[in-house]
Image (cartoon, rainbow, N blue to C red):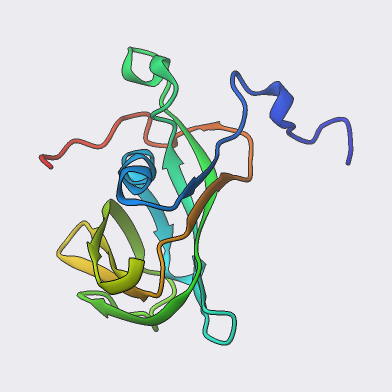
Length: 158
């Protein structure tokens, strides 16, 4: 690591590291991932390990200064879901690795014995559905926050 590399200690607050094990936890993770963007190339499913992952560029909504008139920040975060039995998509072409998706929300349709279906709702009528044996999702920041290139918060009705 060189002296010019970004470090978490240089950021205004520490990196997030959260785990969702129930619907209330998932609601917190969903709110923090609202308006995150990711290219299709950053979505992976490791079928043998039953692990789904997204590398997101998410808004730093946990920083109260983001709500004010200051620069809008984003941070790269990894969202990992364990115990994924199947994945389905709608309204997106998984083969087009250049497609950029905008995540609006994550919700759980509970099933039997703690499992169910996780639904990732995307802008433009896209969706990703994961069938999970049990809810276990982690959200972890992996880079230092940076100023969003657009300089603006997304504007839409939810």
